Image 1: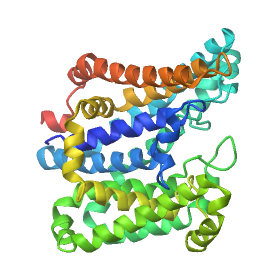
Image 2: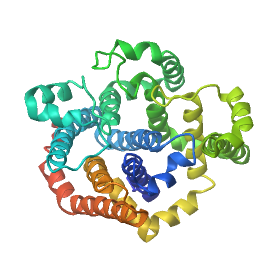
Image 3: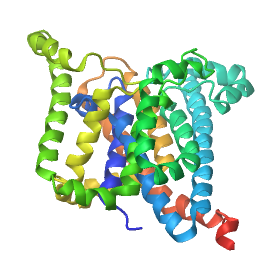
Length: 377
């Protein structure tokens, strides 16, 4: 399968935004995706992950069969779960070390540091069962659920795409009722509601699976779709920008609220969903050449490497969020240039870690992966 360099670049950009968004004192935090659109890097990460699942599933099934594809994503679900557990332990230990050195930080809840020291086995247990999802890593919890469901649900999506879409929409509608039924430490289910976020994830999967079939049909109406998508994206952007303007934009904000009602991230609000879907069309069609050129630039290549780092890059961006936050708030009242230097250090370190992984970790991981029995046969 030919790599889509723009896809890798966007995944890397999503991880950089996730890192900066969780650094409260970061100067560059004011310029991430969430400041200009009604959706943020979490939606971008989940949609791109779903799209990649669809692409990989299609390639593996065509070459090695369905069982090989199902096995691949069952194994991937375990890898994501392992990253959640290991990352949660390292993050808590890092937090404990920073606090021991007198370096306060606000990127994560400091109670994790106490728990991992006072009751390490108990902390490991609540991570392993996902009864607790530490902030910054909580999106991995819903990703575990979604990836684990792929071996069962993707074959159904392939056979009954329209019925699957209707069922996904119904499940999304009842997501706020279903999520509290999941046993969890806050009695409200997972922070990222899997019954809601599944619609975005499997929308991405469907894009990867069926793009060869539906893109020729959509391209016949490309102008109309582009105008509609641009309108939806600008509508969401106006909501966010107006909220940041404050009191002068209050009449506009009230008028917009009559259209969208209430926006909630955690169950995946419909406005956010439509905005990210609209943005995906704009990136894939009218802005496709621009995305390719950006991906081929020096910064684009660096973002590609971060995106290709996968779970390694995700866990690294989380740990760097905690570390950089501690550097920016200690000592207090730092000037902007010093905080900006920490931002640049964090981004360069994330890129360096991803490059190291691609050069040394990823090849070794592939060489150690045993072939599936179906592939040996």
